Length: 164
Image (cartoon, rainbow, N blue to C red):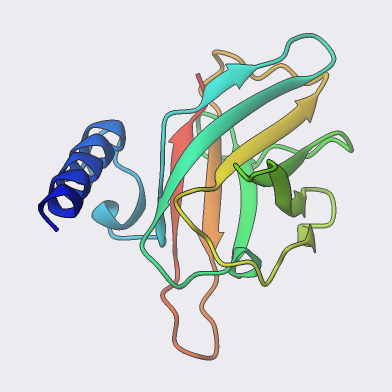
């Protein structure tokens, strides 16, 4: 029992440091519920790949109960305007496994989930933003998750993080 309490305390400390919790509303780098919107906090994006296969991977910490189909995803430029999606753009929601797997896929061109809309968000999953040959490095662009209000009264709002 004591080991479980210690493990939970360590996990909360790691999450607090990783996601900069608690952040006051409106502070720079503020994402997720602590900013008054959305149902998930997004970790700092890590750039992967290179020419022809640019991507970013991000850890998540959902507040609980949301499904991926309740989310629309956009990319915005540094002034808040929407970027026009390329046919190469997608978001894959990955689960570590075993074996590791893709549990949901969002298509930017259609603005819909082609796989996994009913999959529950969990902290074991990660967001893998696939951009193909589009290089957004260092431009101040952001990934934005828009949470849609559902008939069951689920929370609406948005959360975002800036791509490095």
